Amino acid sequence: QVQLAESGGGSAQPGGSLRLSCAASGRIFRFYRMSWYRQAPGNERELVAMITSTGSTNYVDSVKGRFTISRDNAKNTIYLQMNSLKPEDTAVYYCNAFSSVYNTNTWGQGTQVTVSS
Image (cartoon, rainbow, N blue to C red; front, side, top):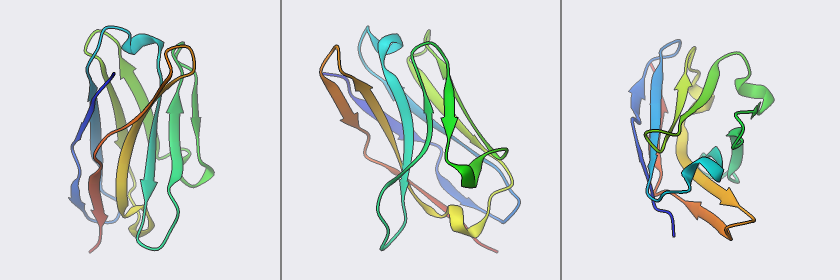
């Protein structure tokens, strides 16, 4: 079963940038659909960005034009480049690996992102 480890969270000022990373174990990483979710206190977990095994991407409207998801299959890693951060981006960010073929739906432990002045 795949294991995920997020890193790169922390604090930033409004307008600043952070880059999250999610490293995956296993040899079939390239077949997974990979996603970033976030959950703020009192809110439900929401999908932020998704990248398929073929590299297609999708974003929630609130981050379009500010966040970029990417993957490096050679390093078994995905990234979330977050620019023009806003206080409402404050949340715990989770990495997810999904594959119906390989019966996988795995979550990372989460990394805190705090945006404040």
